[in-house]
Image (cartoon, rainbow, N blue to C red; front, side):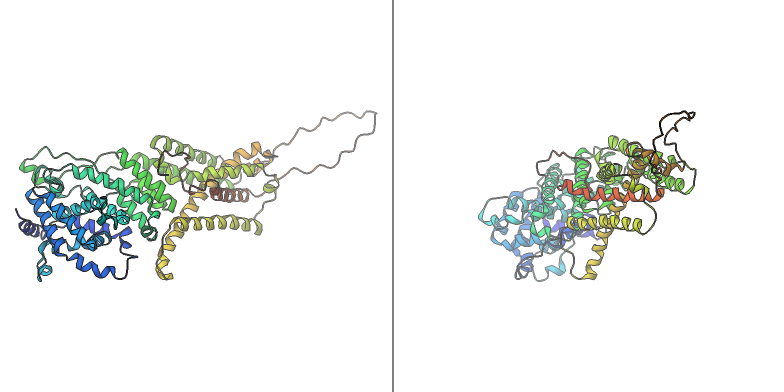
Length: 574
């Protein structure tokens, strides 16, 4: 079968069926860093792009590649033809690196020829064939840049661009498990079998895994690449989503699993008519789980993308939802809300024991400990457990302070000023940190930058709310349970929570008057300390613990405030 015949067949198929492979690949090439790939080039560079995309030598080499895929022979000669074209026309290499999406759109025209009516008569490529040609070119371009020749050295600094294009191209079929391309695994004419030569499966899966690992290394150090470092702040998160998740519909979907699939054993006609039936694994494989953890720890949480971190941890849109993990998260949230509601109820109703708030507060951290032990660090990452740990350090200071602070505190301008100062300073620190961690350039103009700035503000607010929740629980447990035991005159503090006066000592027994020396005059004693307003004590302790949790980040300068509660890593790249 010739290349022209294949194109005509693909044309008839494409008119009837959608092209999810090409559409999805085109969208992924354009999103994230795709928006800045063509920036920073010389003014005259783009004038060479259009001729390069219509280069007759490139068209002839692509046609040889298509014929080699169809016939199963001559693949080495087709690869050599493409390399010769790139050696002679370096502008073709640059346009493939800087504008891969445009090259994908031009494939039908290039495969149709270079005549005057080629653009008008270019047939539509079949979904599988279009992906196959583009993926083969992306893989060959990556290997071409890895060769040490005078022709490739001039493009060596653009290797990360080739790595990105190669990964996106080779991984695209794995994002569409129900695509017809998978049902062709039993036939030697399938696109996956013909990608790297006749009967080359499972080589595409292996190269896709290699491509993801290479692109992961570049993405983890993207600030070392000036072109990527100046991308909009949210562009990195789009690339992370493409790296670890199947589709671009949020961060709670199925992970991208690049596994070697066996061809279907049932090759009967009835099985072919049913189409592909690839069911994903019921649990996340270890390699993919490690990638999810890395995405949350090193990309999402440092940028305060708490909603997206929760999406990966919960996985509500996965084919097999982690129900037990979601239920435990719900119990933690319910206990935390119960602690707040119970505390408010006890403080508003005289005679009600504070136990109704203390029990769910303690149970909250018991459940967090159980979840961390059972489900691992990914489950605990969105809870930002460094915040309560640092808040506990702030509580130690409160317990050690002189009791005057909780005896003199009353509702009023001084209290409100204190809360505003501690809360405002903490939130301001978080705003600065979220902007510095979301490196990159915002669009020029206040109106264009309003949306990303608002998003960063909301992210800082989400971390502040998480910090306040932890600070409240720590302050509640500390001031009601720990401080009465260890603080000076701590038993008097219990009056604030119980509302009952306690005995401070045993009166001396009365004795009969007997003659003797004159009695010693005892100086007047200071009256027993009385605690201030209970809610004022708790509010001041909460905002103090919040400030301690936020500003203690300077003690671990190499880690953001949202980092997991770990101190040792066994990675050689950090």
